[in-house]
Amino acid sequence: MADSDDRPDTGRRAVLECMAWAGGGLVWTMAGGIPASRLIGAAHAATETGFSFVQISDSHIGFSKPANPDARGTLKTAIGEIAQLPEKPRFLIHTGDISHLSKPKEFDDADQIIGMAKLDVHYVPGEHDVIDEGNGKAYLERYGKAAHGAGWYSFDQAGVHFIGLVNVVDLKSGGLGNLGAEQLAWLAADLKDRSASQPIVIFSHIPLWLVYEAWGWGTKDGAQALSLLSRFGSVTVLNGHIHQLMQKVEGHLTFHTTMSTAFPQPAPGTAPSPGPKLVPADKLRSFLGLSSLTVTHGKERLAIVDRTLAAG
Amino acid sequence: MRNILSRRGLFFVGLLLFAYVTPATAETARVTIDNFAFTPAVLQVKAGTVVTFLNRDDIPHSVVSEGGAFRSRALDTDESFTFTFAKAGEFPYFCGLHPHMKAKIVVVP
Image 1 (cartoon, chains in turn brown, purple):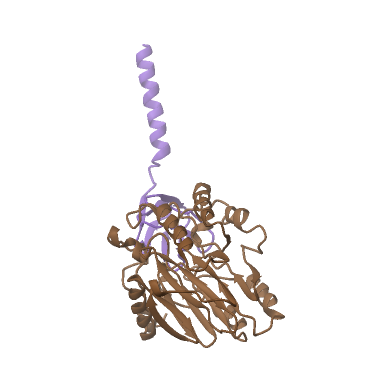
Image 2 (tube, rainbow over the protein chains, first blue to last red):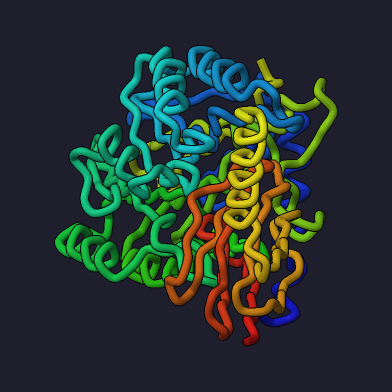
């Protein structure tokens, strides 16, 4: 609430510059804490001893406003991009806002399009996915049968522990995203007996870190979740919701948000509201995209390659 | 004769309808949602006022009372929610999807 929250700090401004470059077809790779950019054509995933996966987000199937009259079409493009990746990903993570209005037809269409990737998909809901009459019942029946509570869960892949959290239900007035006591207790138990050397990838819809309070871009009790992760040597935090790239590194924690496949949103504080950002139709795809993440055993950080839909 | 009767009948039906949809004392007011904000942020109305909340954004919003007095479903673009504020008091509310959006209805006797 302090004045300083009203405008991006220097670090954030630096990230915004990165975002502009990413829009132009550059990618970012994190290795040893030093971000380096290179042209997408030069991107390669050298991983004899690791694996890669892809994060997509904010597909908003059902959205048809001027910012993108064809959210289905751009999701199809994104799924098509996955086949172009130099290394076949093991699975997809979708960080929420699959649908625009939680309608069965929107979920059906999303499933049909995402299914074309022929990969397992691990979902967490966005706030647009839990606005059915049952406040999220439709989402849980479709995607969360094996999950806990409002849809949180964890799984392991080749030694890496993945955790999907839900921070879009039971939101409180004036607040941010919300995990709640029950989910935090589950998380503490889930992490309790794990070795600090096990790499952790934790994902949710709304950023777990405070990106911009005035627009609600953060999670009220996100710091409690992150404190449970502080003893781990490699933690990657993946989010969506803000429809733009943002990245920062704090010690062993790497925070990364990915682009939407549907429409961009303005950088923090640069518009009267976080509503859809209207860009020229022929530029839209350079504001949309997905992220490919590569785990290399023995390396602390994942290599993250952001790819716009204009890259193809 | 039949004609007169039916005309008279229509007149009474009309009168009843009028009384039903526009109670003589009911006042109306409107809150609009633009750019992720409720306008006006504070609306003062008399008890019994029917308030319509209209979403004009490209993104769905909802109208949720902090005290549980009312809760809309998600309103898509140009959809509205109507609630009659029968009792005096202060009714703070927010958007269930974007809870940083806050506003208040003040109902006076």
